[in-house]
Image 1 (cartoon, helix red, strand yellow):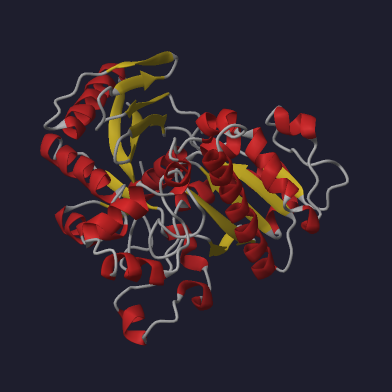
Image 2: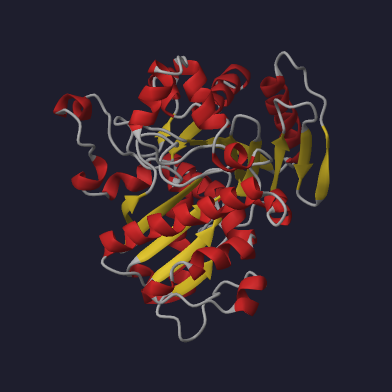
Length: 394
């Protein structure tokens, strides 16, 4: 029977899923079938799948996540043919902490360990673990694999991983972990195919979605990244603040009398593009409004400024820049913001081809640009399927 791997990418309000045929080597990068349950905790959740527009999905408001998982499971089982079988489920798990440096087969002990890291990634970790736990209940013999966003950054030097805190903090695991690792690992496969030997040089990948980060790569390995101990650090994001003076948090807690929960809510949910603009976390909604709304204009300008500033910092770490690649939802599809970022990088020799950028071509830099600028679709789900197939020898 043809073995299939189901990949689940669980967030706080959405679950992406993809089904891969792993009988061939290499595993095809295009899934047999994929889709998404969106708005799980909102008033109008939807279900969308390959070739079908999203449609409303009624969920029990008391247990919406379980309902979303149950619907995906039902649809997956309906898709699996008589000559196919689900060999494993592979999960994107954001945080592996100091203990898990590689993908791991899940069991009760690993699950308990990973629950300790929920405070470090509250938007994703608990929901991935909830899905794993629910599948253990429903299919106790079905192998499950956790693939960690932190793994790819384990190659970074000690000076990139450490904070200037007392040594005891390092021993307790307080360090720069970095995230979006499955996306960056996919780039380590895709970029040499697209750009040849240039991909092995001084490369920065900009993963720009609702969450956003940068990764500096040399020889296709991570040498520095903008996210640190948590997924709050680095770039300004849809609802997250990005880099912040810790003194501001102390002030808010001591002077404004905000509780820990209130500060966490503000930093994770009420900041970023949404917090500054007061309108939306989505640049697609903000760009048409910037001419008439000053806060929207400021939010977008700050968003671009933070990206340019962090790219400059990572270029310094690399000693220059040969290749800049945009990926994820905003990076792949928003030509306006790509143009604005690149306009701020002229000092590095970045020059865009306006027509290629408007078309979202794979190479959007002009022929005389000293830095090649590309756009590459990410494929975190394929990386998760690939790891599970290798780990389980499916």
